[in-house]
Amino acid sequence: PPTDSHSDWIGPPDKHSNLRPIIFYVPPEESALERRLREARQEAQASNQRFWARHNRAFHQEKEEFIYSRLKAKGLEMRNESGRKTTLSAEEMADFYKDFLSKNLKKHLQYNRDWYKRNFRITFLMGQVALVRALRWLRRRKKNVEQ
Amino acid sequence: SGLFVWRLRNTGIRQIPCQFVHLCHVANDRLITFQYFNFLKRMYVTQYNNDLSQRAKPKSDSIVSPLRELQQLDQEKKVVHKISPISSVHQPWAETSSRNELREMKSAAGTEDSVTPVGAESKEDRQWKEMKLRLDDLPGILARLSKIKLTALVVSTASAGFAMAPVPFELTCFLLASLGTGLASCAANSINQFFEVPFDSNMNRTKNRPLVRGQISPLLAVCFAASCGIPGIALLTLGVNPLTGALGAFNIFLYTCCYTPLKRMSIANTWVGAVVGAIPPVMGWTAATGTLDAGALLLGGILYSWQFPHFNALSWGLREDYSRGGYCMMSVTHPGLCRRVALRHCLALIGLSTVAPVLDITTWTFPVISLPINLYISYLGFRFYRDADRSSSRKLFFCSLWHLPMLLLVMFTCKKPVLEKEDKGDLLGESHERAVEIRLP
Image (cartoon, rainbow over all chains, first blue to last red; front, side, top):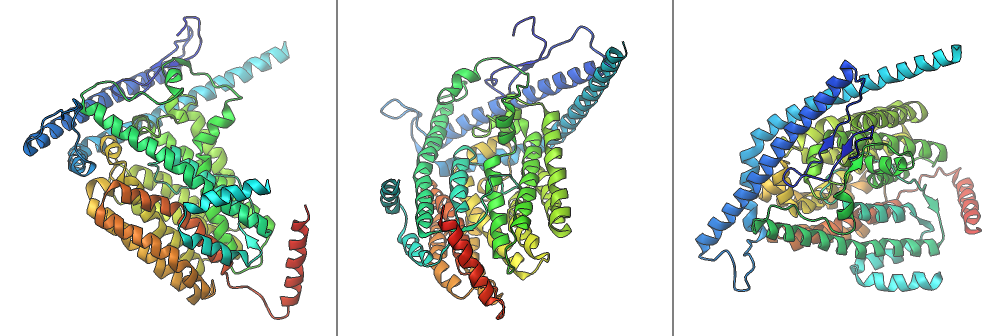
């Protein structure tokens, strides 16, 4: 993003977490409230990125292992004659999906709680910042009118 | 344009089971038709192209076309419009499922790259974008935030509830109820998206939502939701009646605070979601009559039961996404239950259709005429139960898409006429006048 910009920039989805990173703009006269908001957003972004990158990587890895073990049990190779990867049918994969979901349920419950808390906090801070900015703008206008 | 209509009709009919044609002949006898089902179908279907795993029957806003009494020509047009969307649905589904398979293959191959998005989106997606709100983008963004197509569907079901109520039709009440329902639905959908940003990012069909892409801030999404929800509920409570307003508020609460968090906690979310989908027609009924009677509950019951074959079939193909995303759905955790419940509710629809004339909502022709379509969906439900594969789930899902509009249409045409003996003459005169008015453009 260009250096003379005055707003945040959002990028393409991350390879591992599928989340879009944001580069936050730090205004020169940032108030304490605005700084709290920015830091909360940065922290949430980092935490989300960590969680999803790890989670998705684990998913793909475990899926690989599952396919490999199933194929081995059936006596098949990882690649068939045409050289392409052998895949299991959707019904066979269903066992893996069920297993993975139940294994990670507790992790998700914890993450959900954290995410909701963070989301509310950030939105509330945004509201406060917007209110302060609006009041400041109104005050400035009043001053201009009086002058 | 007449020729065009005929061509489409001919190509379309081939793709639909014969009961549909039979029904058209029956329905053509009446001068009444639903043109809004026209929109309903098109929007519903295209919505599903984009939103395939979206469970919801939440409140959403949509284009409201009040029911009218129209000519046979319009009836045919409706048939045509209903048919063409079905063919367009097959393609995107195939696209999505082949994309899913491709993804499976790719991940099986151990590549770390995420699936490259198809089409022109990919290039735009790779760029960094300034997070500044542009006012001319705003309508489109808000439309997507409020899931406007799904809202259209919900308002249509509410309209169906209004139409089935055994009271004379009042246009202002109808419009107010539809608008209020639409606004409430927008609000609910916006809050839902507000809650689900990181999860939506990780699922293929929801990753282009406005909050995910940063086109709008969460604060603005909440403000929009409030500015739709509060006037919407107020409109329903003050402009229609308090009962409808209460139902609307309850449904928003049920969808945003119960269904949305429950999706990630327990499979009970499906039943809660079915209630969410059943409430709009009940609201339509209470808007017309002001009371919550057996007819309203029956209509709600029909929509409640419909949700299960519809959603369970849909979720069958999305098990990988649900598993990775952490969504607790029957199709992943209890596949046997998933199929059993779908079949059970297909059969329930037959039962509910039979109860309708008992409650004096429709004549006895309704269970008779609706039996073929109900049997057909039950048959597909049974196939899904027995085969448990992607093709049977797809068939069931697509059937549910045309089954509901048709069932509601047949229900309306079989509606028990509400005529007092002394008013009968007047009403007939009125309806003739109205019909004549509309015939002349």
